[in-house]
Length: 73
Image (tube, rainbow, N blue to C red; front, side, top):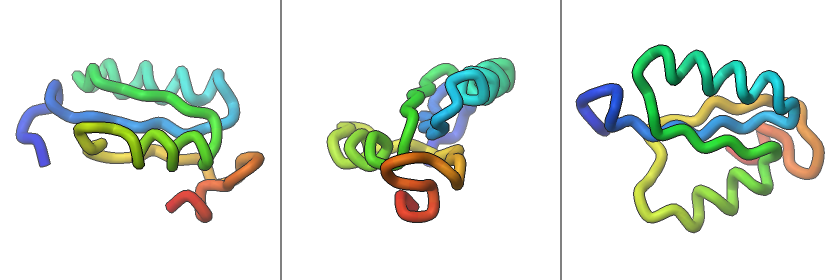
């Protein structure tokens, strides 16, 4: 895992775009600049499977369409 905040890579998964943007803004204020937002578990899984550098952590909603957070995790 990375040692500094600016090296962290976050994946935010939420079907509510306002909530996702709020989470991303909060992470940004904490010094995390590499933030990816997707709006359901299926998109998150596709992103995790194709990304070259793994995410440091995931912030995920539980109740979403297509694939919920529990199924994604």
